[in-house]
Image 1 (cartoon, rainbow, N blue to C red):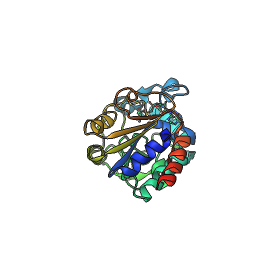
Image 2: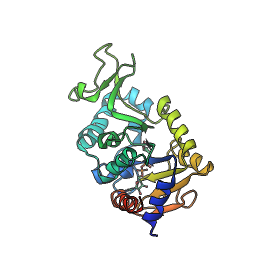
Image 3: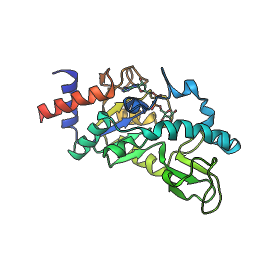
Image 4: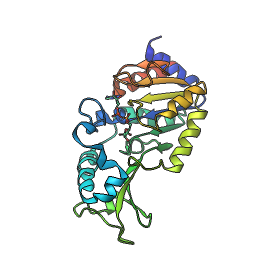
Length: 247
Ligand code: APR
């Protein structure tokens, strides 16, 4: 049995399999990772995504946010790894995706049980009245955008450094991690708190950890049971082939 068949068998035998994804699953869609070669944090200062900086330097922060997250991210499409997870959900093999990503690509690929631990770029929120609007309703040529209802400051509905994790995503992600008997980690360094505690929480409950990453992560030598050192698309293609052979 090769490593893809081993992973496929664990997924088939599981009663509650979840995926935990990071920026790496979207790299082959053209979304740069945050860390490592070509990492966004090599080019941009993460301070633009700190809530205090944003509030005190709104125009400058919005310029960078638009350049990265709307001009660059805005055109990207799901890849075969996103579609594979959506197919696994449809076939009853995957119960949920917990994602650190804000690119909406899991939902675009058809996954429905998606917990966006760091929020989503698709929504813009007013910091004054709390109203949420779809990003398509915001004029990105007039920065910083203001709320049509109250004139307040608008911000992407993503978790900035220094902000709390959305309550719904936090509680559903913890619940899924505790219920999981199998967790597939795809494309994450495992360096950002508190998201990075979820796989460890699952492992503590006896979950089998399958990890897909071309590079070792914080998890690989600590909690990973099956380490598939490969890119997300190729690994997921092989796992789906193995599932079809085994079912
Ligand atoms: N397939 C799978 N994994 C890949 C691929 C690929 N083709 N290319 C790169 N990777 C892996 C890298 O080896 C690395 O482990 O993806 C990971 C990307 O790491 P990060 O950029 O740190 O992404 P992530 O772990 O999701 O970061 C967590 O940090 O800045 C915050 O909010 C941001 O959600 C993000 C969080």
